[in-house]
Image: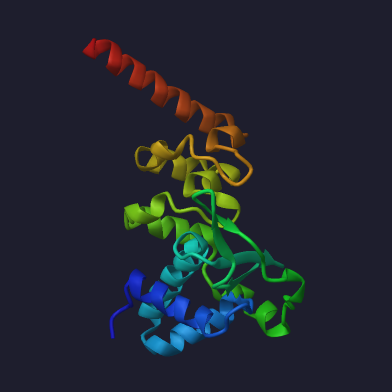
Length: 207
């Protein structure tokens, strides 16, 4: 079969999590469940599938309600807790959390660390494929793709894709930090300044 769609992968991940409510599953346990479901044999399709899977997992806590998400030793762990949320004063609030102390990093998980695409490969895929619905999705700690690129001082990618990403300049992560707050590389700062100056020039010309 062809590489599954993003929606199919999201649904399969959700099935894996709801089948083990209140239990943290590692990214590899979820991947194995989803992979078995689609039974992809072609090596090229499987690599594409891995990238799509990690993209979904990277953003899954912002895709579905009642998802707990954490990282331990560089491995993503996710759980589904259907009773974790309640309504109060018109807002959805978390009323309890699964105990993360119960997460045990298995030897098998540690051995599989290099088998999945790195975060930057996932980010490149989203940008290259122009997956607009994922450009603003937040990953762990509430970071957008632009946050991640700035944190990694990735000047070349920010320069290449800035037109797609500039609308996320003022989006805050879980620490109330925007990508602008996190800039350390002066070259990246220059990109933002030049772009803003261009905007001002265009506005002046219109007026």
